[in-house]
Image 1: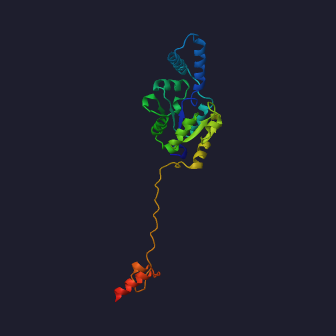
Image 2: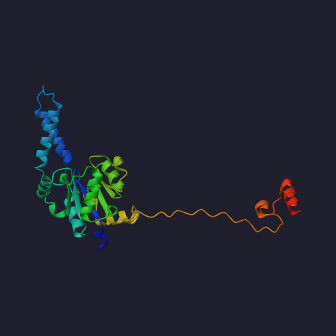
Image 3: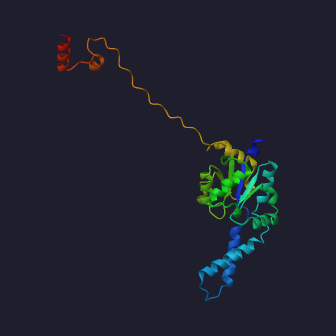
Length: 245
């Protein structure tokens, strides 16, 4: 295995693979135009908004700008990739096929995997890629996802867009587009901290030094009493003299 192949790349679906922010905005606009003035049922509006977004997701055919070129580069370097999402597997696979990205992903984490949190999805992706979490890089656009990646001992690359750069300061690297990346960037990430920077290590407890032994005493008194010929109280001297008689 070549050094680059030891790494794994994990991509979040929202705003990293697909421009879901634009889809949600279109769904909001369509809902606003179609809404009746006397309609006040919030649950009904939420359901309708979710349906509009889902319908638009099923029609998406273009990935985030620069993503395909980046996936081409990491595919040439034989670095395995995974995509994680809360969507069902069928719709996810169909969307990736429409975007012509399916061949780049060796693992997919979807609703069927039963992962309850973002951290579980990231760790599940690492398991499916057969890579240590500390050797994985997560591509995210949300500060919460970046924090989660670090909590999983993974590197995090932030895509600026949905959130400004100053909200993504925790990321190991922040980019405005995938076109800014190269495989060398990944090597530098791990060269800076090392691929095992968060691996578990044994902590050896330092032993406290033993107190020094009592020095040898040459006086006629007991060592326990005189403690290295220190001056003894007068009453101790009287006791010892009486005993010697």
